[in-house]
Image (cartoon, rainbow, N blue to C red):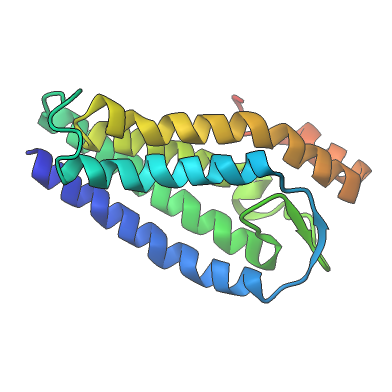
Length: 193
């Protein structure tokens, strides 16, 4: 059962890569007007890569040698697939809505526009919400306490550090327009948080 759930997780990772690649190519061609990235920002992004990709692969290759493995049943697999499907949909929708305004780090592009349509009409940080769903899906699909929860822990750390800095950067860039946007949207979950 764990092999099957790992294959499902790997397919989710491959789908994410296929969706992220065009945005990365487009972002490299755009000029940056404001760059607020720090060493901590880059470190947390690397931690996300380790937690969301490397550790599950190392677990499957047997590097953890059965340490912290847990039993895998059908219910966690179903919950993992549901979380993974929600992750991929929200991730794709977030990228589509952001278009040329997306950046992997804390940057404002030349000609940057405040995006308030699509999923951004309901939440300010749907990309972070999608990554939290990815971490949740991984926690269900990878039957190991370390490799399964590493992605969620890394994303939570990234969100905790970056969201306030990102909102401050947007406030500096868009001023009252961003304040008005914040007043009518939630950070992660529509109508809740």
